[in-house]
Length: 315
Figure 1: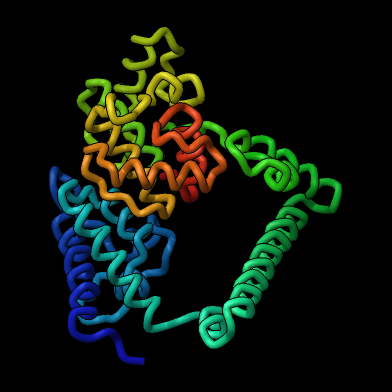
Figure 2: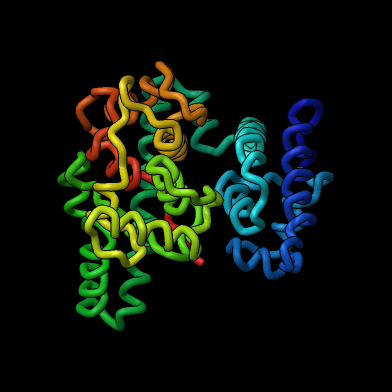
C-alpha cells in the first residue's frame, strides 16, 4: 500500500518531523534523551510503531493521543502543541479517507435507511464484544463468577456508574468529578494547571501533574479552607472551576474549557477568547449530554466535560 502524496503527504511528513525534533531536543536541563525503547514503553506502544511515527519518510501517522503524550513526556515547547494537534488531525483525516472501514463502505453503497442499519448494527456488535471481553477478563482475574462479579461491581462503584446505572441515566447525574493527583498526565493535569493559572497561580501548563502543580494545589486548598493534600477531588474541583459566560471569561479558564470541549470531539478553537463559536460548541456539548442548553459553563457542565474525556494516564 502506498502512502499519501502531495499536500496529504506534507501533513504526515511535517508531523513526523515535529515529533522527531521533540525527541532529538529532549536532552536538556541535565536529562538524557530517552531511548526509543524506553519512550515506547512510556507511551504504551511497541518500539517499531514509535520508530515509524518518528520517521518523516514513513506513511504511518501518530494518533492525536500519542502526539499529546509525546509532547508531555518529552517536555516539548508549549507553543508547538496547537500545530502538532492540527497536523495530527489533518493526517488522521487523510488516513480515514484512504482506508474506509467495511461498515463505512457498506453504508456508502446502500440506501440511507440501509446505511443507518449497517452502522447501528456494527456499533451494537462492537459494544457487545467490548462488554463481553471486559466481563470475561474480570472473571478470569477474580477466580470465578461470584468473585469476578464482586470485583466488577466494586470497580464500577469506585471508578464510575455501573453498566445498568449508566444505561438508566445517561444524563448529568451520571457525571462524577474525577480525582486528579500527582503523576497524572495530559487532560487531568492540563485542566488543573489552566484553572490554577486562572486563579493567579504561576504553574506551567505542561500536562504533567508534578511536584510544582501539587504544591500549587496545596496552596489553593489552604487558601479556600480545604484539606491541603495536593489532590483535586470533588471539593477542590468545585472551588477550582470558574463559571464562564459572555460576561465572565477569564482567559486561562476559557482555554481549559475550549481544551476539554475539543477533547470530547466537539471541534473548538483553543484561543482563550469566549467567542460565539465557543458558545455554539458549548451549546452542542450540553445538548448532546442532556444538559440545559444555556451556553454557560456552570458546575454541571464542567463535571460532564471532565467525565467525557478519554482514559486517564498516570505515570
